[in-house]
Image 1 (cartoon, one colour):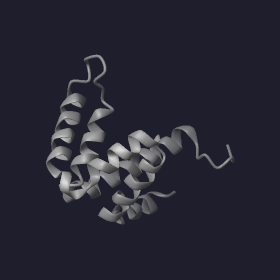
Image 2 (cartoon, rainbow, N blue to C red):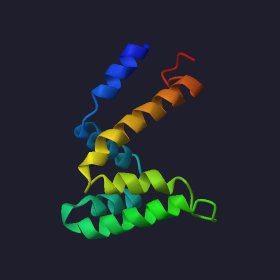
Image 3 (tube, rainbow, N blue to C red):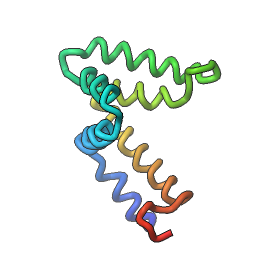
Length: 113
C-alpha cells in the first residue's frame, strides 16, 4: 500500500466502520464474554457502561500493578465510544494503523508468506 493509499484509507473512516469492527470482534469471543459485552452495549445500560469504561481506563493507567494491564485502556475506550461518538473515528483510525503495523511486521495472513 502506498503512502497516498494509506492517507486515503485514514480519511475514509466512519463511526459505522468502528461499530462494525466492534461487532465483528465480539462475534469471535467466547459465549459468556460475548453476552456480557452485548449486555453492556444495550443503550439503556449507559451508566453501567460508562462506569465500566472508566474503571477499565483507570486499570490501564495503573498497568504496573498485577492483573491490571495496558490491555484495559483500549477496552475502556471502546466501551466509552458507545456514549461518546467523537471517539469512534479516532479509534477506527488507530485500529487500522495497528493492523497496518501488524501486517508489516508479521505479514498478511493470506498464505503468501
